[in-house]
Length: 336
Image 1 (tube, rainbow, N blue to C red):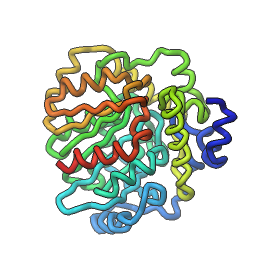
Image 2: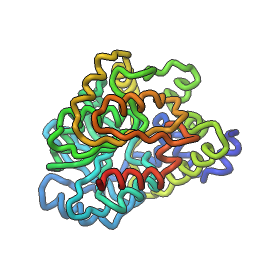
Image 3: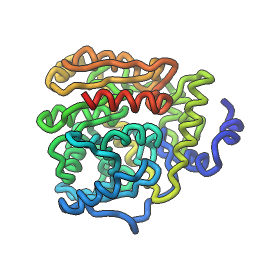
Image 4: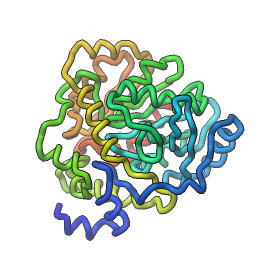
């Protein structure tokens, strides 16, 4: 697909945002205004925030902030429709992704049935601190955020890098994590997770990648998949107020180091997957070039209580290409 066609089909505001995105992440705008930020430091504020957010959507939910014991102030969004007996679903984002890079259609589909919590981990987007360079440290940071919200039990959805973090959180907090969704990710020591293709690296590591880079990396090179990718980029433009801050180049480099270490081939690491007892939904696109689907098969093989779903004619961004279908699958899985 030519860049000319992309400019024609994607609204100008979204195209400008994507052109300034933090690698494979379409960032809408600049640093968020803190005028409407909400502190979540007390139980009363937490429950008030929950009630306020229930009528919100991914495109309108305000940025909230909470300070954890590690000294980091985390930026997050919390909204949805909690039901009796349900637990919140905490989302961990992909490489250089921020709050603004979640597909509104996917998030709102899931939030129609439960409460959702989107978060910028340490040093990412609007959260303070310095992004660590190991997945293990990132998982401890994620736990500090969850503890700051005083969540006794919760579900996890991790996408790509976020799926690696989710695995570690589930391993470290088995008494709190109820169910896990792992999307487009792989186990520590898995298959070909250290990307070496010059074209892929060229698009993924650009300081200022554009729409064509995102479509190349996240969507299969077919007419239907590329069209779905363009629609996804258009949906990112739905949020018009209180945007998140972009991920920095320092975050890019730290996350790349963490993912590279995680991806060092080591079959002995796979035995760690036998430890989690939570039910796990593993999903990916059949043509994922960033995280080969073989890694999803490894997760499904070694996790003791996992189900596998591979989406056809799709790449790393399968969950955006099939936003409603995958969102409904996630809800069905979490409801059981």
